[in-house]
Image 1 (cartoon, rainbow, N blue to C red):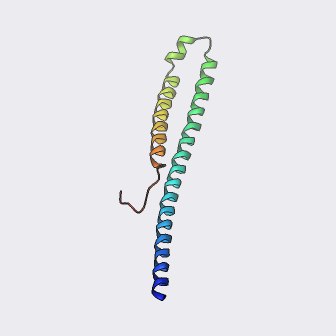
Image 2 (image 1 turned 60 degrees about the vertical axis):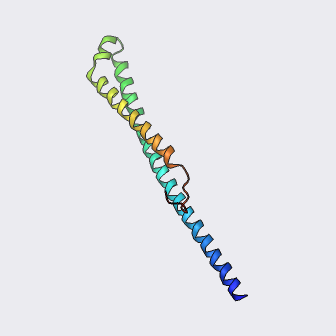
Length: 108
């Protein structure tokens, strides 16, 4: 009887160990996901600021449409916005890849 009790206790410990490993891995994944999403939100805010800057410049130059397309500041901001869009897309893809659950019992 004591042997059976010891076996059940050991199985319970193994299950607890498995569950804690699974929970630990999932917490790591969630933290990484939230970090990426935080960075994505920061990029979105920066992009919104740049869009607002372009809007102000366009409003100031509204009488001269041809000047708007050739304005160096607007061209620079547009290029920066394109880079932010690419980075934002990359972060979103990484976040979607990271959110997959991982089984710590299997070696990946």
